[in-house]
Image (cartoon, rainbow over all chains, first blue to last red; front, side, top):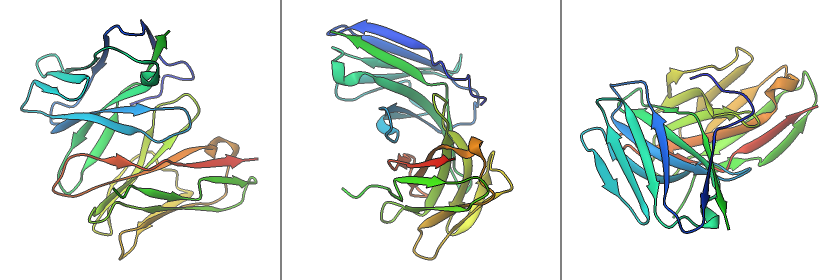
Length: 113
Length: 112
């Protein structure tokens, strides 16, 4: 996709609240979806993934929901902590010999103390 | 656990110079990807390799080339550098039979 420029959408939440970060993807042929967390100056860090034949998967404090009907992916973070402040990217993956990962638009999560 | 290793972490070059970035994938990962991320932007896919062959190509300039070697490490070569090439360059790897793609910490390239 095209870059949106220098300003990423921002979600501001109170520490201890739950956060919901949403993402729309484009390729209905994608096999997997991943959420990454990126802190300033660092590489994208894997958070959780989900297969295209699933609609929900839970990890530690995080849940990913997949709605293939509307091509929508969401990341729910329970009891948001200051350390969760970062840019979050969803990514869709086409697996196989020509495996390719395409990032969605990054969203900045800001946690208020 | 071993992660994706990139070198150098920081690199400063002048315009029209050449730069080479290296990537060492996670052991037993046979697929390598390169991404470019400008300041405040989303990572953009450049190129990928599977079993030492180019498998996909994204928005990689003609001035850039890459290859994957027999030990599965990869190098991204950038020539005739321009100011706009200043960015964070990520390498990622995955096993061909797997799904999750893991990223390195990136190489900062600054062109002055």
